[in-house]
Length: 249
Image (cartoon, rainbow, N blue to C red; front, side):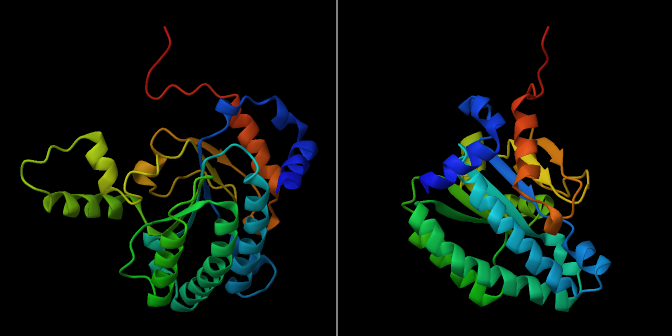
């Protein structure tokens, strides 16, 4: 583990000069371009998703050595159910395999796993893996790994309203109460930096997860991307002046 940290800092010496508080506290990744990558090569879409998951895993292994407390991967949006059933089934197989392998790594690294999104539409075996992962890593104190599956900003708002209606009538909706109504039960703050692959320049309905987030686009399709592409995004972020709706006089 310590050796990996030395490796990424030696490979990208620019990172050494970034103060700890200039790294994003919460990095959210929108992995995009798997389907286009497969199509360009005459391969099934599933192969693009498989390759993308493989590449992303390596990138995440490298980035976890940086002082970033929360890392979220938006693996499947609420709108992705509109895709053909074969592609959705393939994605679910990948998520299942990924969760099985990732649980061991999370336990070893003492990281906490949190799922963001709905569970009632996900396959039963994936929900069971999510629940097992959250239960077994709940004592993790070395950062968070969040996986957004069946997550969408508008859908989240609807579910928050439904939960709020079930609160005692005298309950005042404060920022703290609102946070606890969100996925993650208040443990996950909005992202500081959103990085999206494939050159797309949109957030695709992140909702509260994208509040005041800085955005960085990688032109490469996910299967063609590497750690350096993401490091460049983090370096650029570290030099930005974040104002959160305010302005300097």
